[in-house]
Length: 313
Image (tube, rainbow, N blue to C red):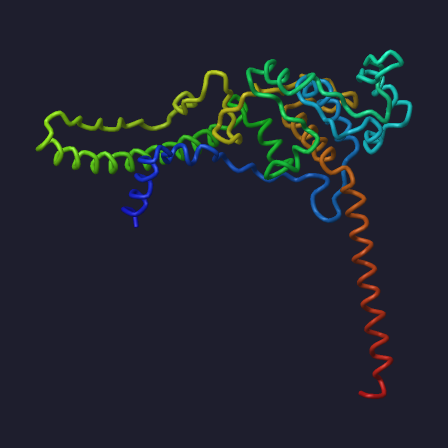
């Protein structure tokens, strides 16, 4: 069995894929976290959503847009109409054309959607080292793990993760390298045997180079991440273009909640979940009503059946 695995891996190396390349998209699985909206009866915590919006507005909005969320949607967070108008007025949107055919900027209205911080994707990429920041409207539904993944990502940078998590990554990557090197050596031995046969008739044949042993992974530097990437334990490949966006007290919460990294990350992750599924509370309420109706209706049908067939039985 082991020989089969090594042979298959050797074939991958021969094709230019390699075990490392094939597994580059892997990362640690985000730990499960308890959320107020978890489960059938869970609901959004409006106070947490407001704090999450504050984090988005003061930190995330400088790079990430939310083009599927209108200012009026923030009423779900508990803001009244005057507060919503004040929030919208802080933004400018492009409108038009006017009577002269020109586009113009104006203060946002409640019906407008959050404007993008960049004019287009090319401008976004140019301002962020070639990687355009994704829109956050649906990111909580677009990533496996949803808010758990977002929370893990925001708390998964090198200075924030535990030594235990780092060691787990180092051991995993060391094992991958060992498997890759074993596969490369097996492929090398095949090429070497062919060379030894060929050199008997062709003295000019070139001897294949022996693969170098990459050695164990003992530090983040040993992972070989690009200079422009930041280490993140939960991002595929461990290298993310975004530097750590959050740090303790980077935001001063209006409700006095301590602005720890954990709170900041949890609040903005919950807000992203709401942005991706703003009608979840209503959907759950309707689902409960439907289930209760079906239970009552089933009881009525059963009673009717007993009544109709009483004489037969």
